[in-house]
Length: 461
Ligand SMILES: Cc1cc2nc3c(=O)[nH]c(=O)nc-3n(C[C@H](O)[C@H](O)[C@H](O)COP(=O)(O)OP(=O)(O)OC[C@H]3O[C@@H](n4cnc5c(N)ncnc54)[C@H](O)[C@@H]3O)c2cc1C
Image (cartoon, rainbow, N blue to C red; front, side, top):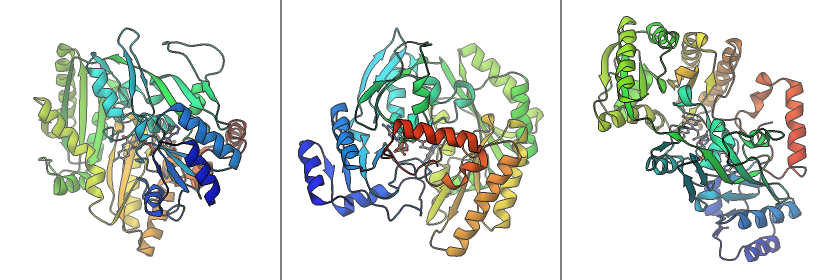
């Protein structure tokens, strides 16, 4: 715990900057979307809202001199306890560094501060006929800084890739308070090591992103979506495989199982056919004529695979309604029990049905409800499990199920995070998927960038 005098010192140095120091203000920063029970007693000493890069540098220099942990926070929507203190420390809340500094239509790039909301960048780019594709399902709240630090992806990753594919350059404040540039504002860069890639996905443990230059692409002229329902998982996954085998290229192939359909329809009704075993939501984008052709081909495949009740979006509202249903799944699931957890496992596509059946069997065995959704085009699923953390038996069952789900994922050639990261929640499992040699190199890299272990300490490993 910081004593009064260093707190007064940093408050003096950052005069004019909003700082939270009351216990009730700091307490809320012990939570994120992980609903983690691990960290809830770890409370930050201070929460600082930097407005400029200089504010960040001053804070980090102070923290480095006094050996105080620094934990960055965007919107706090990560699901793995990545932005809550492991013990104490200073939270850098980036919500006030939220300017889109430049959209360059000719270079097709954007320069942004880390607190910019992903959806706001998407909307701003659209005004120039441009497109920022990474779309974590909660893009209306999550930030660029958080999505870089987790290498977030989302449904459109199937066609467009993850955040790492759009970061051209970054300004990063290092653990001693200095600043480095990791790339250049050019589409290609083959100069030296790809330093940026070390920071992307590093969960704020190696450096602090204070500005990012991001690649934009032309906005697709048209969007269309179709939802199809299935009586069984085989038909559903068979149609995913056929779409891929036919070399069709929708922007998303997303999945909801029967529990997800029922739960969303119960709390956020949009007319889903909740009596079915599962559904696919497929989005197609591109030139008008190509969208129509692709839609015809995809619907033909869905019909051949016994899909029923195809719902097409005929206008923007219907398109938004279909997505609202899919994006509401975690919020709906959260209404079933006092807490909700979500996971993020991924396997090679050919093993998807085995994964889906296996996860359901494990949850049934442990008496847990599981709403399964996922970006199945990528082979990724999110088991959303509502539970009561106060119920000791249920919590024990949940922990056992989680470990069994990871073992199954690994047996099927997959890994324990495709897009949500490791944080503190998945840290105990990292050595199941990263071999000891690679883990050793990760620890060496951490020491090089953060010798005093002050940047988001004790996360990942
Ligand atoms: C309902 C729901 C749906 C989701 N859907 C998806 C999805 O489809 N795809 C997906 O990939 N993820 C998804 N997520 C996970 C999560 O929202 C994303 O990973 C998100 O991008 C995190 O952004 P954030 O601003 O909330 O970051 P935070 O949670 O605040 O922070 C995340 C990590 O980034 C670090 N960090 C934040 N800012 C900086 C910075 N400036 N410099 C260095 N480190 C920093 C933090 O320390 C922490 O380690 C979902 C989460 C929820 C709750």
